[in-house]
Image (cartoon, rainbow, N blue to C red; front, side, top):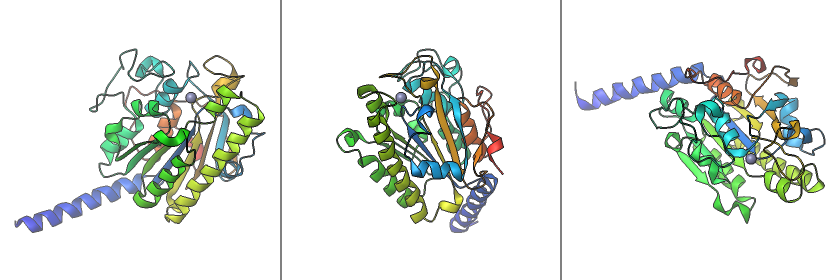
Length: 300
Ligand SMILES: [Zn+2]
């Protein structure tokens, strides 16, 4: 066989393989938006029209629990890794490497993440992560990403992150993109949780979420997208990390293709169930070490 013909056949086979992956998927795109330190206690009072529209048009719980401690890296890690700190080993606020040996590591040398699972199943998937806190980069499996953006200038320019997100969505039409704002956590620490400043920040963040939704529309992806908006932990007074529901309960909002509308689900959800739910959307087989449960009830 001539090389040209062989390459043509190979290309066709690869296209078919990709199509068959996509056929199993519940949606072609997942946009995962995280707000650091956004406690579920604030949802009812907050002026967040875009988030509330996603709730009205999608499914949600206000009782997703964080793993303990109710701190950042341990919870972002659990959200992506389908298991808790006892298994993935990232146990602290700022863990960059696991303090406990990860029970299992994948071929990238990290506890299996939903990003790594998607990369292995769909080598050509476009996967991105845009974050304001560089601690996120230690728990996402950056080797699985096409686009890994730490927005270092976010503290001076709070609008920078949404600019990167909008550009990336329009340009790359990502299969999975994780966008993590480092607020309202800072306001929670400086001004306090459940304060006017905290609610003002939530309204500002809601505007960014609106811009991200608009970018998905402009990119012509809306009918094939599932949005998830959630958080690592909440807070109380000027902190978090402890064992109160204000610190431990966060919202999980899922909206878009094939998701039930206006449905507040009552099933128990933990931080690590986020990874399982995204894996379920993409038809990915969970590694045995994962303990997360996909929230199947939210799909029509
Ligand atoms: Zn945090």
